[in-house]
Length: 250
Image 1: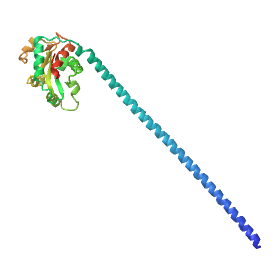
Image 2: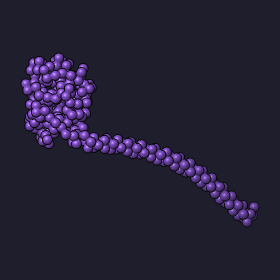
Image 3: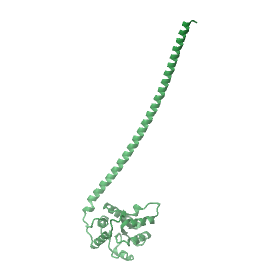
Image 4: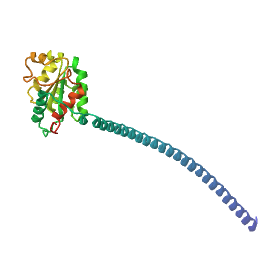
């Protein structure tokens, strides 16, 4: 083989090798591009799913917040409307003994003692629960904070300890006196025993008379109080609330 032929074949082999290398490079590049495209597509799908999830979560959080805010606003508006439409705009007429009781209780309360509640509401569940709950709600509407077991008692904890705690946290006491209360049930006896030591006890009679109360061991020496036989719960709340708030009774 001549030198020129050898050189020709050598150049041909080099060109073929170059073409093979280029084809392999192109193949590898195409494969890498396919893998990169597949990876980018998966990442894009993942990102879109994650963005959608975050957006849904954010929308739910915003919707929940807006719903709670709307409920709160409606409650505030309803409370303002109640306050504008009732207690402050009604004229309360006291019997002399009622006015004396309100003045005495108001004068005996230390409004700066740091206690959590304005009043502890004691009642016999068997015949006084509805009246007590209605009275508590009416007083709360008038700005009086009420400790009542139907709301404050937590299941799973000692009821007696929670009742004792409620008595300590309240500046004054209201006893809804009913037939069952006067019968001397355990809880009401215990509560009344504590409340009688306060100069801030306010009796509310329901279904019983002052004569009935007088027969009950003379527990109320001055027999002062309010009675549902004479006034509705709203009126009684109107009369009691000034005794339990810092403003001087009108």
